[in-house]
Image 1 (cartoon, rainbow, N blue to C red):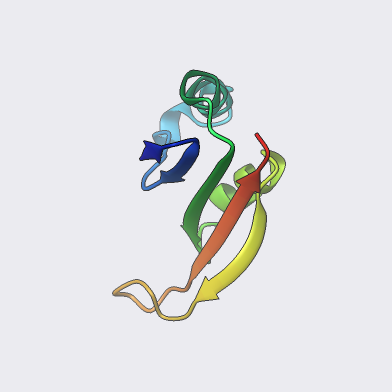
Image 2: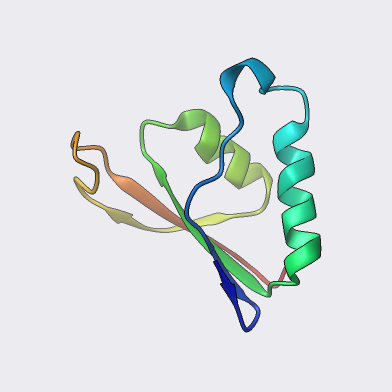
Amino acid sequence: YFMDGIGEIYNFLVDDIYQRQGIGNMLFDKLMEINKVTSLTLEVRDSNQKGYNFYLKKGFKEISVRKNYYKNGDDAIVMIKEKI
């Protein structure tokens, strides 16, 4: 979702068989280029270490945690990237 330079990612994934091939990097970089956002937020499950590390590598910072956010009890880690 993008509006007035601010974006929020609701869902971003690459199928397991295509991971570690640069596809996620390419898609993510293109997304940023096309939408000209100034800040971007997202949430990632605390159990999704690959996703969390990907977002850290892309310059996101953790800003808060939503405890027991998902039905299975996982926490949601809220992250932001500013001044894109």
